[in-house]
Image (spheres, helix red, strand yellow):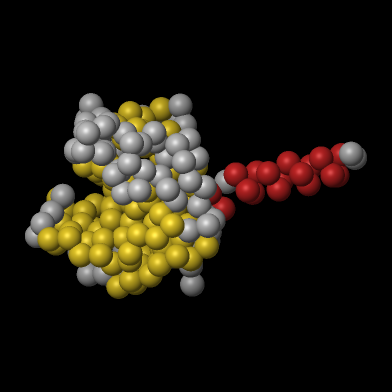
Length: 207
């Protein structure tokens, strides 16, 4: 194999492995490779940042949100890698993803995935949960513990579009409100699950 072929192969691998390239905006707003703890995601005994990842490991039956401490843009394109944990009930027993317009655990929108390769979205308003997009298993998602997939969420005003490994899977209209952007996870009722986030990037929303 000549040098040109080697370089081409390396470039193809880099593109395939880089979720940051999934974001379609032209201007980067912020990114985090989680090489070390920047202090931008809060602190709790279930949040660990460093070595290229942010880990959320909630006690059994608990949900947690690592809130981004910087300003949340009104419109944006977000992509992040999620690595599935070991799970007793991978089909909905545990989930993780992105929290939009987070005020508190009773008021937020959640775009999430489960370890079987399902993706969906729901809203919690005054403690009441409403599905925005049913959780469905998608063939482009790599299922099972240790598998990593890219979740992309584009927000333009009330319009939210969800992509799984750069393929559109859902869209809905939300109610934009003042609140935080966060990374969310929930453990199984009888098991503590360790979700890993990596390679987070936020750009302006594509035109």
